Image 1 (cartoon, one colour):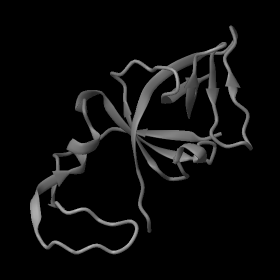
Image 2: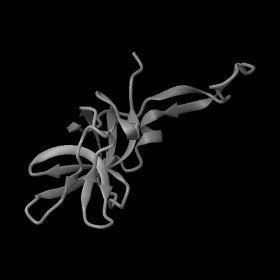
Image 3: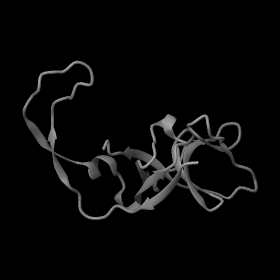
Length: 140
């Protein structure tokens, strides 16, 4: 099961120079050497600052959705979760990150075949804590 540790964003936005050209993921392209304005990752990833939190992922139950061990989730608590959203949920007083499935019953779906889904029954305590809107990861 992937667990999460909740963190609140702090400080001011940081603007970093933004390269306006595209970076080729196929064949190398022509490098255009100019910067266009600046980009704040906070402004890119956070839409509702007052209701946004970060969480560090522990576990590998969401690797099929591109969420890996030690990734940092961007979670917006102001959004209403919908079917197929990736959510941070409090299940029986434990935080987890899963895909919300509301068709044919209610379950929290793992995105790794080695994990079972969490089927929500009348005895399950469930709070959808927030909707995951982004993921940040370091490649080193």
